[in-house]
Length: 300
Ligand SMILES: [Zn+2]
Ligand SMILES: [Zn+2]
Image (cartoon, rainbow, N blue to C red; front, top):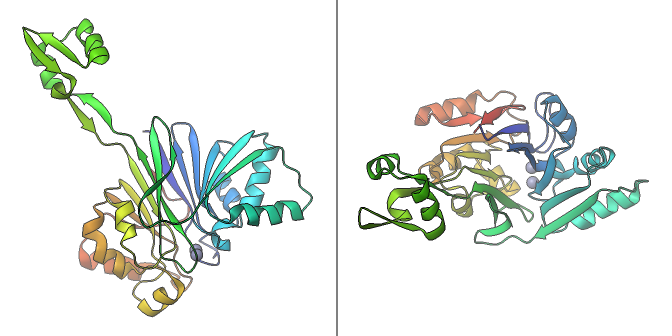
């Protein structure tokens, strides 16, 4: 197991007794990633038995309060834990909002808060990259500027076992392959490409508040895990007015998404129980769409 995704909040707008506001924690090889940070998120992290201290990167999709109000408190806790630095990758405008809050209360943090702000774009753009993974984003179609996020491991070259056996490669051969990209075996030139294949890395996508847009498919296509907002079931008028998705639309674009696992979140308060969602998904016969619940976790 490389990590897990934990839903911290699955309610839209206001929290309910059973559902907190938006927040997703991703644990990946000792790193903690937080996607959105609604009110109460830090307590949800504690209740889920996850580490606040491990959070190095926070991603904020848009500035609505149900996605941001937990941030000042969380930053203060990180500061009290003597965390030296945190990076926040956010829609533009967060610096100003946080500045108002942090300067308006008596609070002088030592933690180095690095805010990287982005404007929505219609094509996929990279917001973070290192040797192991990339985090990409795209503009969505909400009532305010909003971006989605996609975390993807870089592909790895793996040896084709049968070929290795057939060629009886020695340790020396492997070193030469690594250094030169080719070897000569039994008078034949063998390249690395011939005896390896590219293994796709793990991909997680988060589609927060948005109305219909093709950009959802652009970003989410081929994800291992997709967490996507499904505020309404089929109330098209409301979805259009408030900039949200319906389950109906998600089912419509389902074949193009090509995702292994889809988890719905950000439910309207009107649905005290999610049976109508389950019913509609069942009618379509799709097995890999789950109804998100607070503290639901998916390992990968
Ligand atoms: Zn929201
Ligand atoms: Zn919103």
